[in-house]
Image (cartoon, rainbow, N blue to C red; front, side):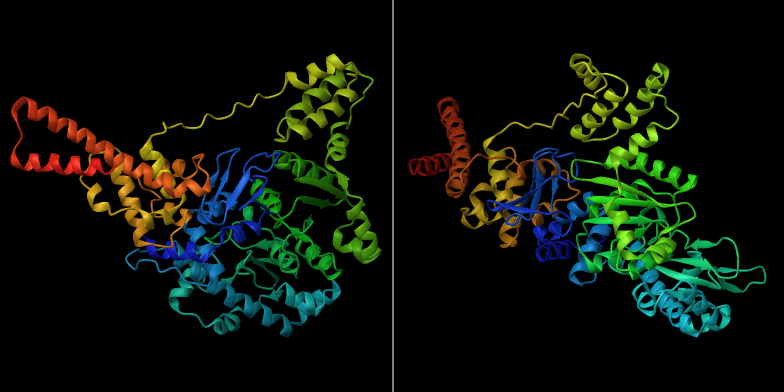
Length: 577
């Protein structure tokens, strides 16, 4: 934690967080006994192997070994770093992170400044739309109503920057922040100006609704036609989806997401009650975009113009998406008529006909082979070979065995492999053999079992005998056990997730994680007895070793008075066994 965030705060944050609720907003969990299960989001999982424990506030996948607490889940699932995960949980619970004041240039505080400034600028842009004839004319021409202006916070950057900037009313410190992040610029004469000046503004929001950047559309033929905010600590085009916040406001887990190309497309379709529309920010789709989309739905429907550029873009998108397709995650495609975009065609056809286009979207397999068969003559052996050479590497990028085999089956029949033996050979000769990564194994010992029991059931600390008599015993692993035991005693309501968090970035965290998910093969009713028995057996074995040593010493050269007293007390303790 590098001393940046107090441990007590992280423990409190995890105490407030229900890991089941957190994960269930992102995945669909089903109750299974006292735990919850679902298909693992971190590997291709045919049967549910991802388990979430409410009692331990911990998750574990029996397939790929992914595991951890609420912080780890956000780091793995949403690709956040440690501080970003803490920030995410803090926002959920509405509390501020108490960073240590000694940390200079804290990225968290820089980001808070940017959020504050973006919000102020957005409000001014939004107010400005009402007083600008040019902007209103444009919106009227595009048939965008007042509800959509408010819903998407559409604004306008004033042609009169000086007047606009005065209304912003910010300190020199904040002005410097805007300059550093290229949100405003300085011209040759030394005057500050807005890079969006004279443009319709489309605020870009993150999943919490915070303004992270802007898209600007030129109204006076200034090039480029569309302009996005520069990259900052809070804005990364490769990871941002426009309209996703608005979709999630209406439906937390949408059945599908319709991906279009422009801001206006999103707004117009939403106005026509197509409520699952998002877009990338005028950029080609990235792997980050695809992962984010699949985190929010099982079906992505890409909508492209029907011209050659649109078809080529759709094909490139499919190739990028193939590695992320699974038995539950798939994509479809809509190719619009030439010279049409979603905004224009829904105005011509109306909602009902456009919804029919969505319902009849081209499936992934059909779209894949439609593109593969371009310029291919299936009567030509050379073309069949060329088809196989082009198609197989792409099919092999799909992680799902089922889908991969299904596409190969279609391909085999296309190139004329109908014989069962030939088909089997074709089907599997190119199969990449997946060797399961050998997990690090550690030997089971009574001490490790004891530590595992305590990690998985921190409340056992309450029934442990006084630790004073254990402190001077020389047993491997005992200092670790006693330290964890003391931590549990100091924090009576601590759970597994919180306990492990206290040891993040320590030398023993890896072994503790292994022990925390060990199958100890002990029924619930016997856990307390087993814990106490193990503890006393370890204590007695140490006493027996000391007893044997003292007896041997007495035979050879005799014992001192204090050693005689010690052997007497050992004999007394062992007689109570």
